[in-house]
Amino acid sequence: MAQASGADGNGASASVDPSRIEVIAPNFKRRLSGVTSTIIQLVPLQAKSIGIAVLGPGLPAHLPRLRWPQLPALWRKPESRRARIWHARRNVEMLGGLVLRGLGAPLKLVFTSASQRQHKGWTKFLIRQMDAVIATSAQTASYLDVPNTVIMHGIDVARFAPAPNGAKAIEALGLDSGQHYAGCFGRVRHQKGTDLFVDAMIALLPSRPGWSAIIAGRATAEHKTFEQALKEKVEAAGLAQRILFVGEHTNISDWYRGLSLFVAPQRWEGFGLTPLEAMATGVTVVATDVGAFPELVVDGVTGMLIPRDDLAAMVAATGALMDDDAAREAAGRAAVDHVRGKFPLESEAARINAVYEGLWVKG
Image 1 (cartoon, one colour):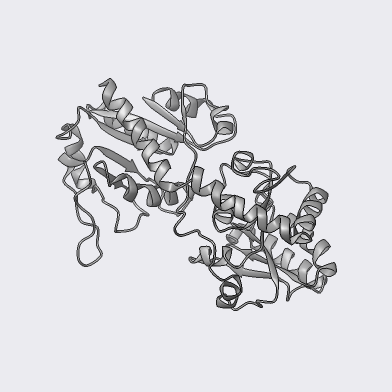
Image 2: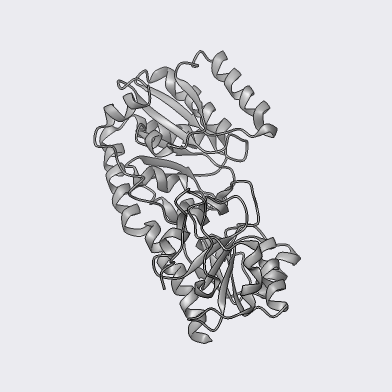
């Protein structure tokens, strides 16, 4: 059943009819996070075939939304199902679903796990109460003690697509179209390996005048000192005009289109979408072997995988691709085909909906 309600004419989210809502996607964290972004991208696609609504703060108005005063309606079954799905992605949301079900709401509970670490006892307890569990990668699944379905994240391959004209894409960013650019996008912090990227560029760029580097992303308050130290290191190396800190941008897909090479230098990652976004844009990737990266990047085909926290390996792999235009461009073409074939966002939404259908079939 497709969702019938959305935003009203003033851009405010219109209330939905709870009787037509089959799935609830709770979001109990106001601050933007990867989980929030996942909900924002998936719900509109899921709503094309099922009745789904979000619940909670920090989400845009265009999403179908169940409001808090409508919560008592959850104690009545939806008109087309024997139970609603409550799809949690955080501990607090699993707990919320358990409380509601314990109070008599007819709910089936689903949890998506993206963690790649041993769960604490409380989390394990909550997960065991779920009716279905989704893991975002095979690596994530290895940390789960319950049956699960691996559904990897997808991306919007229409938004992240190669530039028709690379030089014009670079010029549109206000950059020098005569340069190649290597990029590192995401939060600026030690965990993300931003310092490794900076050190690699300091090692590589002096002997490669045709290359520059872009660091796009925000440093939160606790990481401002870390970012400032990196800028000072770049300045001391005489590369402030070629290693650019451009901050956070909402049009990040345009920045990918300005790149010739992308480096994902993370020391730790839960999943990590940036290699997919780069590859979908036709940009070959050098990525560390963390998170889902080994399941995203086809080593030697769409890019290169290197050990985490290994600066020498990063310099060697990145330098090799900088120096071989043919190999880099071939990997970029293969990357586009790879992402479009295996990681479209529509496929992720359809597979999640199939998990719901499996629960409804069981009754």
